[in-house]
Length: 414
Image (cartoon, rainbow, N blue to C red; front, top):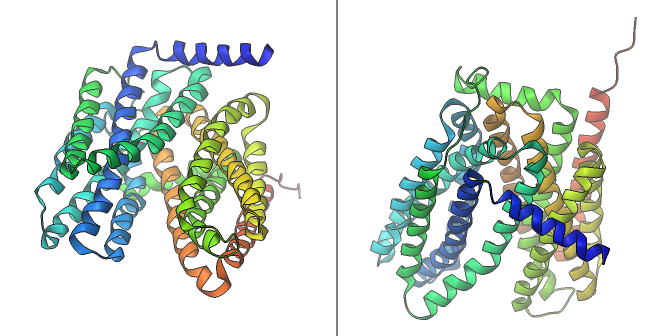
């Protein structure tokens, strides 16, 4: 009865949060846009494979979806601090709507360079949009509701992850690949429409980014460097991202190797991770209320490493599935905690820069995790690669915690 009442109270809190008109508009636009993003990812892979017949083309698509953000996120954060966030988001959505329609006009392999440029440009614009969006949320909800807002955003992202590919596949199955690209373009227009209707009260411009780009980025890093919680937070963000993407790369090899299962079961394992992430959002809310963020994130970092080692040592599908649930829970909780912590602790006029650097750190983790997950199995095999990664990541989290401990020690008096 108590558990049921707690769930009802949580649902009521989410409902009350969505009563705030401007936050509701931003949430709705993003939920629809994210659905289009995942539909579009499936359609891009199908288009490239149909026109080239080569797996390398699919790999290049994945790089085009990932690398541009790694270069743009820090600068996107600076822009979010320099210019009105609502206008910045509105402009990037309108341009992305145009770019999303480019694949409709490509019918031969020779035209794929146009698709590549469009995808790179869209992801670069996402590197501008995302820091602005995250920096805008604390201005739309109260400090106490920020954790709930981030949990709701995370739930929307996971729902899009589950449903988007299914809808995209269904549209493609009826023979309308271009229909997916058109729907994706329309989702950006819908997002732009709700942003146009949204009212966002910007923070005072005092302290906003206004020097050279490099000096503004240095100031962002200085903010992180001065705060012990943010230092741990950035380390765990890198670790969690690298762990997640390396597992995505290695799961097929684990299934075919030590687990002796068909590669098609990777879909089941990824679904398990997604369900764990949803559970992690609720766990993150509870942890935020009970424990300091720095301590919680440090524990999560250690548990991520131990969980990765468990996956590498496991020879049972059930054990790996359980470990992946745990990985999802830890990832979901850490994502919610670090976005909420940044929103609550960093001055509003500098939020864009810190979020941009945070997303850049996570993306760097994705890139390094993907490379490690692809290269290490060639030397150590699938299970060995996972165990080697757990050792490397253990060294990463140990270094972060050690440096943080040293830097927070009081200076001795002469």
